[in-house]
Image (tube, rainbow, N blue to C red; front, side):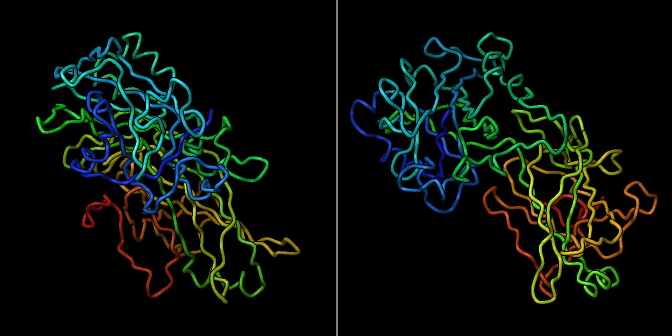
Length: 420
């Protein structure tokens, strides 16, 4: 199934009323528009690998292959609107075809200004006033079936639904790294392409008497977190032998430990003050390997490891289990492949990670590490700096001294004074 990929721009309500109204006939129809939080800052057309080559700048992390629209009463029960519990739409190909064009505003997946919307056939504004509108992108078919059968018949049950259960902490949750096709381009036709499930909610729907168009705007949120670990080796004693004997082939390995394995539709993260933050069904992963990078003429090694994970926390003080990453390094000679003993560290992750955000975690490895990954002397590292950004603004810059800022971070990214 082809996906429709979008880079979306935030819209004001007045802009929506003016731009979305295409004709008098459209003004009589009720439709839902949705935008995706943390959009790419540049304009890009939605569909990759078309003749214009716009796929090279498409936002794959905002891609969707299906849209589901639901409504709920004030008491949280699901509402049957237009004789349906679920209004379902598929986005196949580069544009809707045939009768399916009538389901999409302007008959296209993406309109001018990267806007998009779906019509709800047979539904009027009076049918939905006072209700809550929920939009779901890339919802698994089995979850949609549970809604239609009445198993998930309240908003609370819907949000508590587990939509994915990892069997290993290193199992990929998002599209990057992409599966590639024969042309070495991202292959969104592949069954291995991981679309991110997104949810959006607009409560207490209302329409002004001045609104000619019957439109419900909904803001979407991704259900997972994006993380990058950026590390440098600051131990001079560690670097003496590799640099003296040209051990410039540097391989890093990572093992994710105590990672939350469940992706839920509703938000899991809670503020620390609520004492309700959780770590759902923690599991470990296998070791994953990637080469380190070398910086400058001194060939200073550093590493960048990117991954997706499920949200968790904020965890309380002295929690028994906390997510962390086992990190190891292997220095080898590029031609003889002679190697130094592998060294290990453990990096504690923040107190909490919130969905739809990008976390860049900076850490320095100040000692020689431990020879045994399970050794009693394994050093537990705290992040030196954590940068929390909207989804698309995550950084992966390498900060050299004296620009590398040490904040001695160990708690909540939103509270620099918080320490575990």
